[in-house]
Length: 152
Image (cartoon, rainbow, N blue to C red; front, side, top):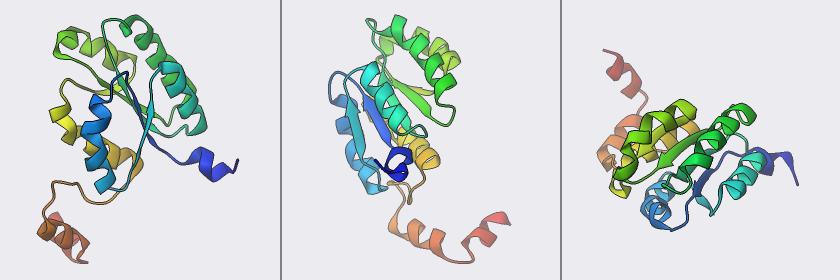
């Protein structure tokens, strides 16, 4: 296995259902990223070990919360360049700050809130324009004087 294949950052989704993966697939593909899907925290850990600068998105449920919090702490220690965001349901809103303290960079409660997730992926993984930019905005950002115009 070559070093480039093991070091390329990826977007890893860890969930039992495909709800979040389906919601994010198209927006992430539009900015040039494919989703690597896993179904367990152990499998997600293996993917992070293969690509330690990846962005992982894991599902928090009432059943896995007790194991997810220490897992987040271990990820932060073992893979300092990796970032983890958490998907959950509104019922676990009270656990949001615990998840953040353990290492989650963001917590999302609805697949309809995919835009912040895509922006986080853009920042962490690097990419093209945000999918909700208009064609005019994408052209403007590529013009040589666009950066100078934004400074003023």
